[in-house]
Each structure stands twice: as structure tokens, then as C-alpha cells.
Length: 407
Image 1 (tube, rainbow, N blue to C red):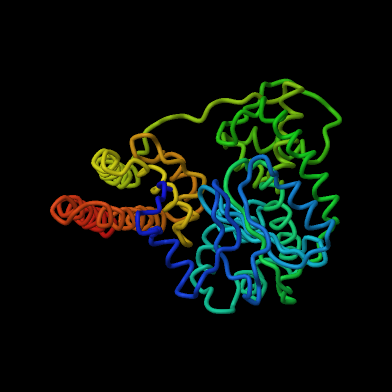
Image 2: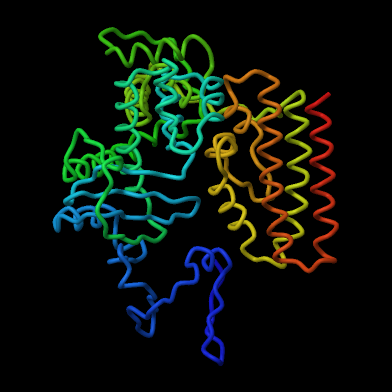
């Protein structure tokens, strides 16, 4: 975010997104010093009691604080590419939510091998109003109520554990009573969650030294060993059946990510598997053509915008975090490259399990949506004469790709 300055008349111009978030209600100065200014609405029904930056204050410290003082409310985290919320009742964590695509309940069920991608995509299109994804999946018989509850618990615990690795971003705590639907009975107390999260943080750092990346391919070495446990046997079996990246192997074996990493580490330690980097081959066929057309567009936009808009790269990354379903699942864990383009192999891997026609349409629609969002930045940051040719280029690209998908 760009620096803000108070002008000679005492005015502070806020970015449009913040103005929309605050609305028109009056604000009061709550706290100030030479280094900060906090505005708020202390008389509001659900006031913000605490706000700050992650860094010297860690997530485990915050969780311990709210647990110790038995607080009710929601702890909000604003992070680089999205947001997360932790819900407290009497100091105990009872729920968590996230805007990150890989922490969506449907993605958790998919990662555990309990629902297929095409079925998940079809059900998502029927989610409306108060009809939830989970209810639709149970009503259709795609998952059992017990599987849904276990996946929801896994989702909440996973969101909490993932926050332990965050060293940047901001937080605020909203004090309020929780609705019954916001309460989930977890298998561990908050103190045990904190201890487990710290243990996982230490162990995962050790495991990833050998695993390297979940996009790498575990490949059998040909060595043999007896007395493997059930998870190890499953993982080794699927690694032998064909080349799959580690993330996909975990899904086939029905392992949650941390459990998969731990199991894979054990097999690597015993030299039963070795990691090979995923191939950097160009994506072929019509999917490759769609990617090439849009990546050329994104490269042009990045080259043109990064000079007048110093934080353009960061703004595009923020757009990635704000994408809605189904686009967010296509772009999940896809990094914006230095030249403004995206890794085509990663995008195509995210579409695994769909029919060819659905893959083309969903890829094209997702990249089209991202291009449209970037035109909003172009309109906002450039004057009309400078913006016009770039917007025309986006429109031309969209027309070309639509013709390619429909032929």
C-alpha cells in the first residue's frame, strides 16, 4: 500500500478500498502518538478492542492472550493475499474461516480424496444464499455427515496452524457474542492447538529440507524395506503407479497435507523415494495456446504499468487473493512471476480431473476475469488517453480466446 500523508489542511486521503470498507459513519480518534493514529467507533455494538501488526507479536502470543482472558469474539487477520478469521468463545477457538482458495471446505474434501473435481465444480454452481456447499454435498450423497464434520474440523485446525507461519500482515479483534452456527466442537483445547501448531512449525521446517516442494515428483529408488505402516505403503504404491507431484500423491493416499509431508519425509529418509523437480515443459494444445495469449497480455500490462505504478506487482497479487470461486481454485497457489505472467504447468495441474472442454472454458474464464480486474487498475491509475490502448488490447485478447474456446 502506498504511503499516506496529511496535507496542510489536515486532510488524509484514504485509498478507495478503505473508504468503502469504513462507510459513512463518523470515526473518533481512539489512540495516537508520533508514530501511529488509530480511528474507531468505540460506542459501536461490536467494538474493535485490539489491533496491530504481526511480527514481534506472533500468532501464538495472540491466541494465548485471548485464551487466558476468556474472550468472546473474532480475531481478524489481513494478510498479503487474503484474510483469515478465528472465532473465540470463552477463550476457546470454536471456528475459523479463510478467503484462501486452498483452505476452502470443498478443497479440503478434494485433497482428502472424498469428492472429485468435476462433482465439486458442479455443486459449487448451485451454492446460493444460505444453502451451503456442505449441505449440498451431503444431500447429494457425495459425502457422509461424518466426513463433512471431519473435513470441517480439519479445515478449521488447518487455518489455525497455517497462521503460525505468518510474519507479516495486520490483525484486529472484534468483541461480540457468537451465533450458534459459528461454533464447532474441536478435538483439542486452544492451549493444545497452540502447542500442536508450534510442534508442526518446527517439524515442517525440518521435513521440507528433504521434500523441497510439494510440486516436485516423489520417484521410487528401487530399494525395498519391510514393516512400513499403512500410510507409507499407500504413498509408496501411488508413487510407483505413475509420476505425480507430492500434493496429488497425498490426495490419492487420503492424507492431509502435514501428515503427507511427514510420511513422505520418512520414505525419503529411508531412501525408498527421491524427489525430482517437476518438468518445465511448455503446455501443449489449446490450453497452451490460451495460456500463451493471456501471458503475452499480462506481460504487456506489467511492462506498461510498473513504471507509473510502483506497487503494481503487489496490487495484482492482491487481486489474486480476492478472486471468487471458481476462479480462485484455478489460480490457487499460482505465483505471479516477475514479468507479470503465470506458470502454465501449475495452472493446468489445478484443472486436473475436469473434462477437456470444461478445462478450456474454466481456464479462459479465470484468466479473462483476472485481465478484467487489471483493467480496473489501468483505468484508475492512468489518464484516459494512456489507458485506452491497453483496454482495447484486453478486449481483443478476450475476443480471440473466446473464439478459440468455442471452435
